[in-house]
Image (tube, rainbow over the protein chains, first blue to last red):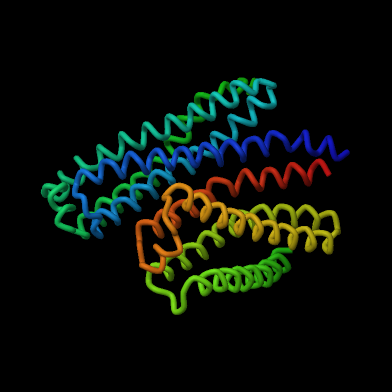
Length: 166
Length: 152
């Protein structure tokens, strides 16, 4: 009885472990990329850089949290089809896709904010313009919240669910 | 049924928050007293994170309680709901500890000393990591609990 429960729950445990490990990697890599980019603004970490850094990390988390529902669905779907390799490959692919999308979006957001505020953002952030950092941070978080569900449904379309006859 | 669940969630929700706050207060007061703004922000965010997990667990708890209630097993429903809230608490504490250990390994800095100094970067990173892992893992952990319950 206990063994059956353990085996039945194995896919959920594996899913949690994968999410945990890949989640750490995702956050560390994103933090490194964002940190390295923001360090080009100035060697001293002022309040504006701190605000932008934390908001950018939060936005990256929002994107992944949205996609994690599809990741779990895909993992359980492939695991139940007895193709563990595909389950892991899809999980890795979704993490990679989310990361690449977010990094692209992060760099694009600098162009959008510069257009919105008509300021040289690099200089403004270097001069500790917290207002601009807050505007940029809010933009990152709000757009991530808006884009997340659409990205999730697009990501779900890659899972080869069987066609229903009705 | 809805009123009973409302009473249940009210009582267990308050108990959960009292337990959470007393645990976190002990943790933070061991580092410093009175708390500086960075520590206050950190404490508030951790409480928010515990709340997010409780919200997810309660959504599942409602379905579970509904199932027991329709089968005329109210007491069993209450017991399972209490167990679920306890598991939620354990899950949150585990993630909290995990984030503290992870940030210690990642930043290679004494996070307690940084918190005393009011370093918002380390504190902010820990907040983001905690909220991220709570939101990321709540649903899979609930699925795991559901799977164990349905097989048991």
